Image 1 (cartoon, rainbow, N blue to C red):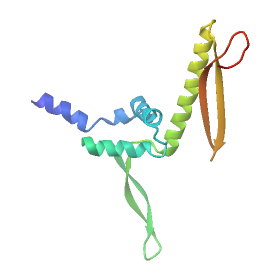
Image 2 (cartoon, helix red, strand yellow; image 1 turned 45 degrees about the horizontal axis):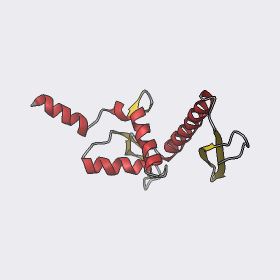
Image 3 (cartoon, rainbow, N blue to C red; image 1 turned 135 degrees about the vertical axis):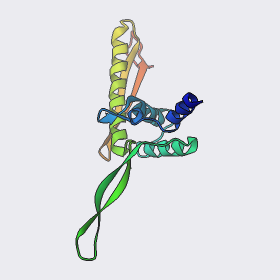
Image 4 (spheres, rainbow, N blue to C red; image 1 turned 90 degrees about the vertical axis):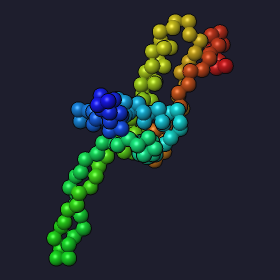
Length: 152
């Protein structure tokens, strides 16, 4: 029964390494966020909230640590400090960067697929826009007529 208890305890309170390993977020953490952004169409600004929503629903403890940060000034003008709880879940900037890396990996994967097949009748199409300092790209593999060169 003790083994079973430890097994369920590890699920309810995952090790820090499951979220954060070697000074960076773990692959499991990043893949869960990328899947939320790509499969469920969740924006980068909302991914962190999903971790807390599902952790609360499944009663899972998200790893955290306390950090001393500057607090309000006291009546005599001296600076105070307060302990703030920091969770080991990526923020908006992390998710935007992760999505950008996944987009680049997708382009490489698509290009490699096209180069590998000598008889491929596809071409690579990319359309980009830059809004609010964020690059948004659409990548497609489109059919191309080999005789005319026109897209189908």
